[in-house]
Length: 251
Image 1 (tube, rainbow, N blue to C red):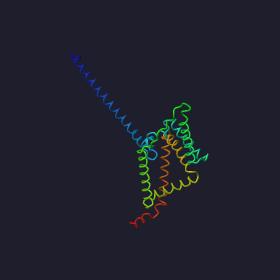
Image 2: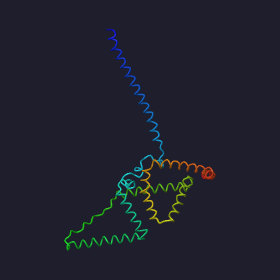
Image 3: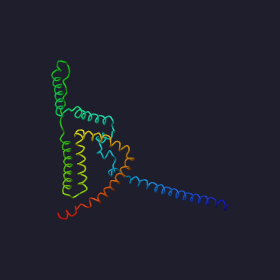
Image 4: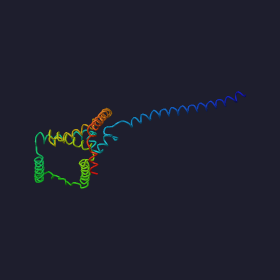
């Protein structure tokens, strides 16, 4: 009888110890999994992105329909926009059609067809053409003008600070950029340059979004090398320019 009374107690104690052991082992495994997950999250956070980008490419381009067009979310719309711009470029650059002549010819053709149709509908038993009323909304125009005004004023502020000799680095960057633009401008007309930029906007972002995991490491190495070369240039050339002395004289 004593052995039979002791066996249930021992079985209960054994079950309790097994349960405690199981919970401790599961908690250890969870802590190990958390420790393993944290480094992966930290590694993801430390991934270098081009131009310090923290948002997706779609949001960097402003989101909405323009970003959808540039990233080919709707292939028919993107192809249509690119084809239309290409046709305009071919018309003006290759065929050498003037803008004013094209606008006048389109207006002459459309007005002549509308006028003839409006007067001939009674003879051919057709309904008169429905000419829509075109009205340009005021609010979008004001928004665009306000955004352009802000950007232009910001550019004027940057140019003023550069002209005042406050930032040598920005001065050199702006001079180099203007020099490159002058060279590119001597190679082609403004419309061709605009078309090239438009084609690049339709190809570079979508390719970058597709291969960003391969492009970002290469861009990181390039940025490190550029910073190293700039540090050498700064130590050998820029640091010897007496900018601080000139600023002290002005003060």
